[in-house]
Length: 99
Image (cartoon, rainbow, N blue to C red; front, side, top):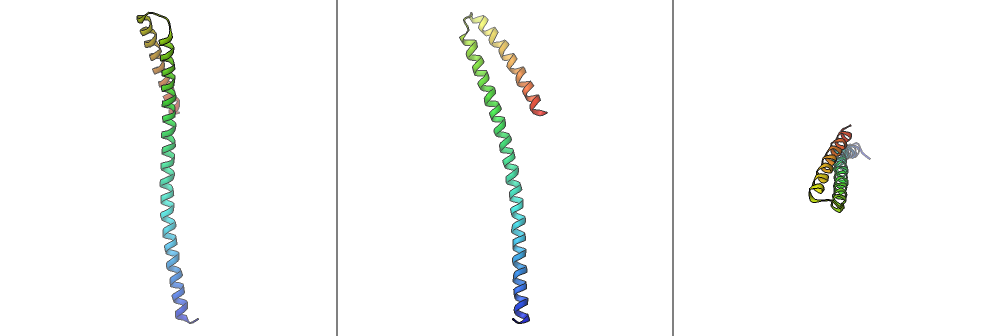
């Protein structure tokens, strides 16, 4: 091979290496974005699961209150007390989630 052929080959290899490095950098950035999005989606899913569990507990309590054999005024009073308890428990859960 002549000098000119070697220079051409070296130039081609350098160009390919630069392209590969550029693509590698772009892929690293994209991977970071996808990782961040994945982390956010997992946090959202966890929050949704907590909300669903909370809602299910509220539904269970409501069913219990409704199934109790008491007068309408007593049922409303029990329901209000239980709703207050649920709100306080939700606040406690929120504080635990912040820790």
